[in-house]
Length: 156
Image 1: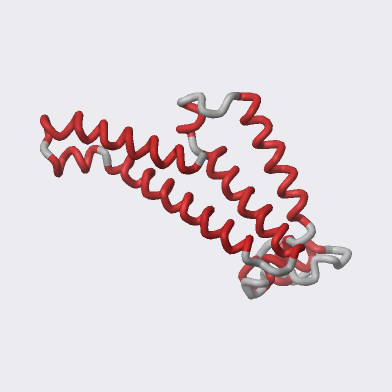
Image 2: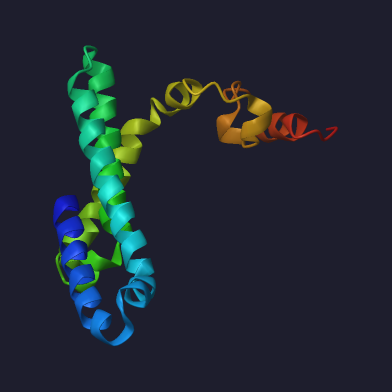
């Protein structure tokens, strides 16, 4: 689906450039289509990220880690598909499939919920920067909001 999106965007960009170039010239036609060019670049990069992420997940030796990496890669791809109106406008994804995608995303988020703290911790972001109750290292305490307010600098 991500490759289809990229190839479709490239095709439509070429058609728009062909349409506008005779009247406006190459430079102005390019500028007129610049948003399309940027969307194509984002679509291409998202496809590259997904391929590299999937390849890296395959190379992981730990089965639990590999499962989590695959779930994150799938979640990334589904989020890209869901957030792109191109799929909906061309009816590439039927409404029933769109609902199934949303259900699958919720399922993947539930699956990743158990490893969310270790995943975030691998980035080494200090608690005072995260500034959210979910991101605090001691989130198992009884009053997480009190802990959040303390981390944010309030006297409680």
